[in-house]
Length: 147
Image 1 (cartoon, rainbow, N blue to C red):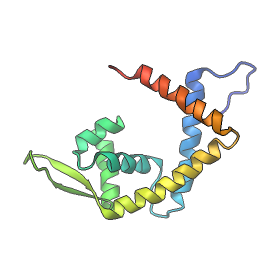
Image 2 (cartoon, rainbow, N blue to C red):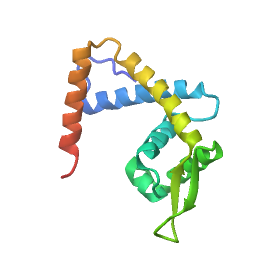
Image 3 (cartoon, helix red, strand yellow):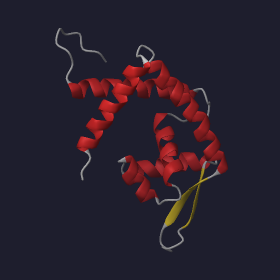
């Protein structure tokens, strides 16, 4: 959604529109896998690739999602053979989420798709502009991260 006014969009709106556009492009690319996954599955899988083994609660916190949404995400990834729920080594009451080899392979395929979408989104930026954009966004993110 792009506002058709003479005023430039606010910083927040511009970030939201950019995020939504990227999510649409990523969803379209992920749909080509023909396994019923999209952007949110990719984010979950990518996060698991860095965190696993972890609990569903830890994953929910990392994704800033409610536990019920993460349960649905994990159910889908488990049905695809990408994750396993195993008994937690230190807490008998908890399960830990383990990324399978199939999950790692899917994550690598989806990362290539994600990289292609990002390259497409930034196709009009020079390498120096891309570097500057990443630097500025990193600084903004870091300034919003609690100490």
